Length: 352
Ligand SMILES: [Zn+2]
Ligand SMILES: [Zn+2]
Image 1 (tube, helix red, strand yellow):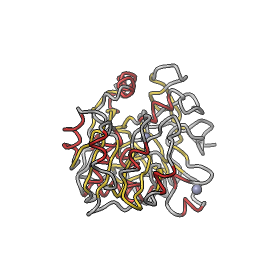
Image 2: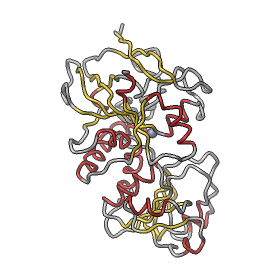
Image 3: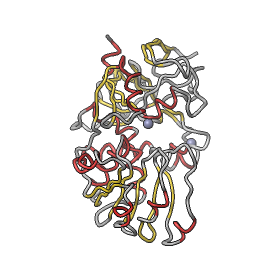
Image 4: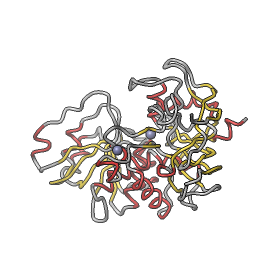
């Protein structure tokens, strides 16, 4: 029998219910576990979709949160990578099978039997779903824990654990770098990270938005050029000019219009998830040998690489800090796109 402790958390018991304080059980650290006191937790759109059961399959109670930054308060007997007092992060993955071809390649996000998500996955140890970072503490196997660079602001680093790796991984995979023109579509939680990271990788960054108000913002974030994507003339000026496009839009949009902006052999990768299928015209791909693809977070080693890269280039997210008691209002504001660009929960508020 595995020993557990009771931990204070914030979550929901049903799709229609608001988030409230509740108690959960966490396992006591086993030999390879570290116990982390949670300092900050970013608020991802997935949290909201899962809490409200919009992707179906939510197990209740549901405690969201997979952009976790905290300090280690205890370690299991066989932990070798971390010690008490270390500042660490936990992203979207807390375990995986460790044996399949993808786990062996460091692609735990595509683990064949399925990765263990930080929340709403079957817990390997307990008869409950996994519970995320809207809580006092979390216990995680050391192999799924990340080191946080010392020079970064901890609260603003939390969103790197999901929004950061979600944009870094495709930019790295498609070899974005100097001499390239890269498009970032949508300037929200994901897009604003995409602009910063693509710029730091040395690319020339073109941001695409439907909002005039975001022009100055995109420039401030590091975009070299900004395009109003609803304006046909502005779009036409970029026909065949881009090496790569990172598409972070979750709303309906004209994908063929963006494919036409790619050069020969260019790729467009989706990281946003529109509800309805996107109609892609065959000729949008055939003319120019173009690729239409997608990407999902990143593996553990790559997430560490991303954090180290962000440390080196002084990159963090632009955040608005909230108390946990404000989470329901924060969800309302996220639905309206009213956040610059990520809410981060100061978890000290849960201890009040
Ligand atoms: Zn996320
Ligand atoms: Zn696996």
